[in-house]
Length: 249
Figure 1: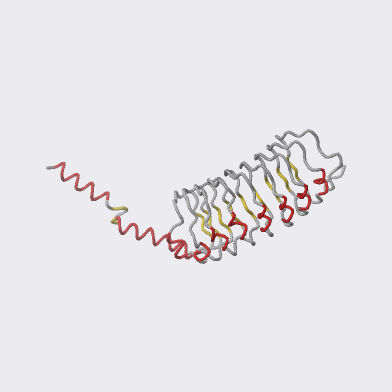
Figure 2: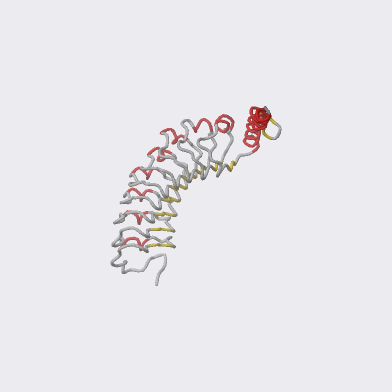
């Protein structure tokens, strides 16, 4: 009889948190989340074990400009995000379990930075090409095999990071990215580079280390702004004979 009484007491205690019943505790938690959303334009929700974009955020976060959801367990980016968060400019989703992006993601008309590194992407999301405002795109440490020719539609892109994928070639259309300042292609399967790369006049940093390159186009010496060229870990037989314009002998 005593044991039964103790069991009843134990269950009663487990049903309360800090003196509140479970239902009351959940209401307090929701209230804290909503207050945080309402008071900020930048949300840091990294390392929280989230499996999805919180409903409270989608329903009350229309004013949010920067969202950090790094190192969570998110598997999907919700559709109609452009309606829920129309002013979103920076979206950090690295180290999640995302395998695809919805087509209407391209309607995020204010987005300038997108970090999808260390996810489960098997291919480049074509919908990204519609985000004309994008300046920084990080797709590193996925399993992407190809960059599409239509990546040239990202006319304002300044930094493209696709380190540690399975990319075999660089599209000829890369030459149309006139504002590209940093191109990071380390640790892929690239065997050759297009001559058109020399038309990326703003390029300052070019990382090509740990690929399968045997040579680089001699035209690269004409890149006037190039300050850093990384080529280690390739199969290079020779380098261009002429000095680089950006670093004359």
